[in-house]
Picture 1 (tube, rainbow, N blue to C red):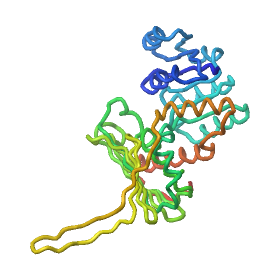
Picture 2: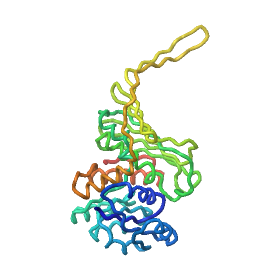
Picture 3: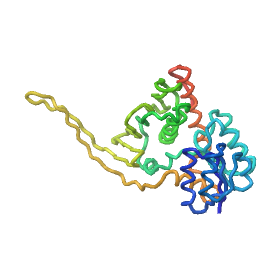
Length: 324
């Protein structure tokens, strides 16, 4: 039984906490949060050790989930690794690529499992993409929703777009050679929406839009490849495939009509809780039952590109040639 600790009892921390009791091979052993009131209230429902200082719970656990604010990730994760604890840390792991590299190197040297919590990787529909996507030439992604005061101090790139960057890099499997990015502030002191265009070395193009000022929540991904159009809905974990499309203009006596025909397939997707699957995968890796789904090199590549996009937007450079 893996003794698990949780550092950070905010929104994401509570999602993790709610799942621990449903996952076999995990025993919740300790909790930590700097807010004593929040910690004490949570401990009323969980008979485990607790402390406002996360370092005081490390001798009681084999592994931890770090769900603290991003700016504290590097120090917390480093302390946990140096105490020989396996770590699942919410994305982004850090806001600095050198710090992320340092953490993965410590984990490698000590033979520890270090995973970044990219929950969309475990979305059932995303898992199915591997079976149907081959050599895409155009990818369009939308991750938009209403404004939430809670995230006003978070980078929209590192909070939202990093999901899409991670998935798209994995789909295309080629280096990015050019990045164009634009964003603007509306309600907060950071950009509240952004549009990014990625060009890959094989001439594939990805357009990504993220927004926290859009009244209708949307989480979609569309992929155009030869003879196939794939449309994925993250929220419903659905995939529709469109084939043999044709279109024509029909001229009537008083009007011009447009006709579009295609064959539609709705792919069966096994739907489960992505966060639960993520935690199970982490536990299986700790136990040595499986190898990590995403190699460390890809983890760092996704973060590096997300940081570059964030830098372009913050400096209002607009465009930058890269090699990622």
